[in-house]
Image 1 (cartoon, one colour):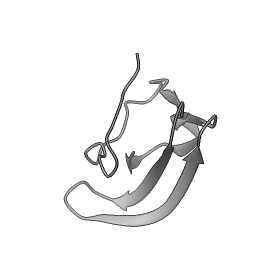
Image 2 (cartoon, helix red, strand yellow; image 1 turned 45 degrees about the vertical axis):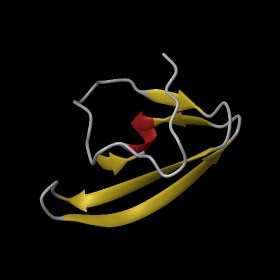
Image 3 (tube, helix red, strand yellow; image 1 turned 180 degrees about the vertical axis):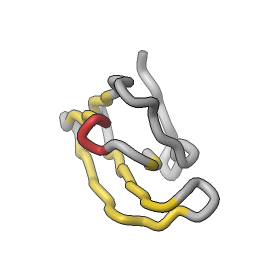
Image 4 (cartoon, helix red, strand yellow; image 1 turned 90 degrees about the vertical axis):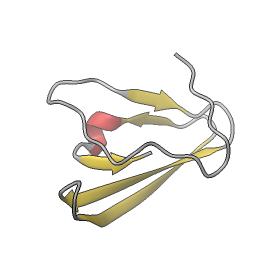
Length: 68
């Protein structure tokens, strides 16, 4: 599946069920993954990772609450 987002668009804050395999490859542009601790109701930003064209994001390495 190919997802195309305009600049500034992002997913809602979410997490994946244990064992769900999710990954993405940046075909053009860049992608930012923000990780959070806490809860959906009170998230606290814990880290931010940037991915550039050609990079592969394996969300198993970045589990927990996040926004892409």
